Length: 385
Image (cartoon, rainbow, N blue to C red):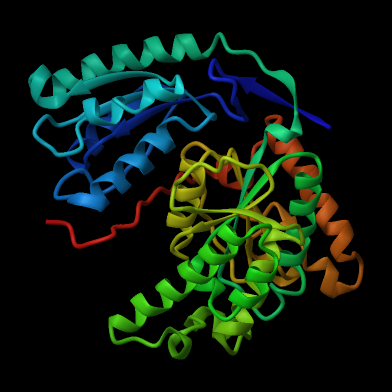
């Protein structure tokens, strides 16, 4: 099975052909946004980081930023910095040649302020955009796809409709040689025994137990019992009663195949198949981590509704119930509520999601892309100094 993608010089395949304007520090965010707005055809990501990162968090930030900027959906990137920050464009740029990513850098202080930086940045962005426009789509095997899965605002039927349907699509993609990532470690609490049984090897099994127990312990160290505070108010209003109920429904997104690898946040998988990423349950943060790890497409299930997208990767929305689908039709791509309505099955909706993934990978725009949603966020590991 094949889709139309953009083959990169490093051998990876993108489903979009973006030129990314990326500020390495919050101080350069406005300049990046101005350039993006004035150079049509570019995209930008805004964040609050760049200074005050120490030790492990510094490496974490570099991994996320460099991974995001080198996602196969990005033809090239313009890195914009201030000049005195910790995470300078030069520091992030050190990682990009390792994966063959095309880039340019510019610094506000070096070129003499905002006005000069915008002017010079526009020239560089135009050059990168001209180069990117020479790329042509070609038929590539679906085994080249990495799909990220996420869920947000689950309701009482998410674990009966949208999530298991996405699980069917996950199994179908993996059967074709592709890779599926699912994350949100807090939403695995109470389901760790199920996941551990599915591990393909002892290393993955041990990492599953360790990452979930560590997450539980970290939450308790703050004086909070997550099992007593989750599900969230929105989940409860939607009909969920316990964290375990939420978790057992959430993990269905990954389908039924063995878990071949467990990776840390924004770490690129080295094996094909089903991969767990250790990361937060925050919707935008979760998506950012999987995209930084190489996911070209995200499928996002929801029972309460969400508009979020990504600056560089299409986010396909799947509603768990038909009421939500009708209410937020402009935000939702597929309705899994037809399962509860009795007009479709988990298998048929899963096949529909799989077909949509292929169409979107070949260029079809998602609702989030049409509406211009481009949310981006990186989690902090420690307080920023």
